[in-house]
Image (tube, rainbow, N blue to C red):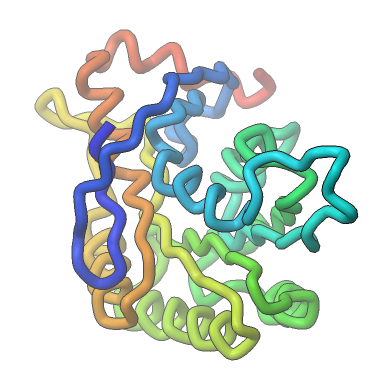
Length: 231
């Protein structure tokens, strides 16, 4: 599956994955699509091979390599109540012997401003060389300038710890117009611009999710969202 993954410049990386679906139930209009298609995370899974270091461990090897940590920084779309966030299910895509998943996303992140200072301070304190940080900060409450400054700060702090930041575009809502999924255009443009300027890898989750849902059609896509928040 061709996925766009680059450091400042876009490169087409052919990568085959078996499409996997995890059907979850979400409130209507909820930011995270209630389906986790493996293609939406192909860019992230590509990083797994680099992070794992050794694909498989055998009994003949004296000791396993020191595990790296993949931190997730974002809002309720990444870490929701009842395991509804995409980050709550990311662990199954990785070798747990080589990669630890630390989902530090918080719903507080959706209130505008930057990622909560206390929560980020804790992530930075734990971070070590070789770790990765997935950063998904985008919603309609942030101005372009605020989002730009916040992303650059998190990138700088991550690099200062010799870890690798990866930016993610926002997951989409079940909101349609003229047969197309409505997107958060301004945040997406800001994220792309910062990724290019800072030469940071970008996982374009919004584009992959929107494309999948649009191919399925509005009626079929609705089954991945719930009108009942209790479901």
